[in-house]
Length: 322
Ligand SMILES: [Fe+2]
Image (cartoon, helix red, strand yellow):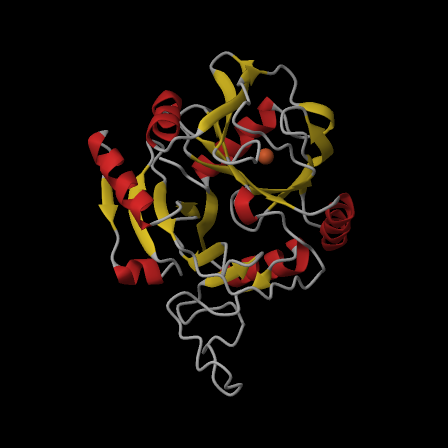
């Protein structure tokens, strides 16, 4: 299977509007110009257009956020029970690749279900199938996303996405071996590198395109969930300007500015409104097909104070109790 990148992420939150403010004012996303399943109206008729009017908010209260040419990249659905990650969308290259992906998953005895046209439309994609990783995350495989261009960040941010996918996610996986098998052997991710930071504690990083890692997997006890979502900006000034907005708004910085050893990312981490952290970075390393996996022994060249095994474990435990 040839996953092209992280396409989109769905989150559950008691108050999606809070996410809309956070994502637009602090991170620099744009409310989606049109929502999945909604009509664009008549071309060339300025009086017609999507009913949402570019608010990014749907009738059910869901919020859709745009970061680049894709119609949306992050959806936040009102959900009082399922706090945090609801689904992860991985992009494939074509209908044929999606059909082959379904067959491959069936052949490996993973549960997989081809989606309907309506289900694809609800994600603004052409075709979709659903499966689940061994950590219990809903995985959506899709091809043919709707691109509507005209992204304009309210704060002048530019995000590095496109062929690198929207960023990376670091997940807690209780069944680490089974989850690694799923991503490597079923979805075709390749190990970039890993770090061992205690007995039974390791962080493992996987790529599916030139981005050093699209996925990080860590085991902290019996906990499954999302530790952080990384969004990469075009340059250091944009990251610094975002840090200024974070400090002005009094948002909790969970890890100070620093540079990671393995993916070279210059970044900082903040609390997001609901349950997981957001890493904002730039200058991430690109890898190619000649890349060989390695073990590395230190997480950071400098900085990133607050990102250590103890606080990562605390975050995982907060997810469990939250
Ligand atoms: Fe990260």
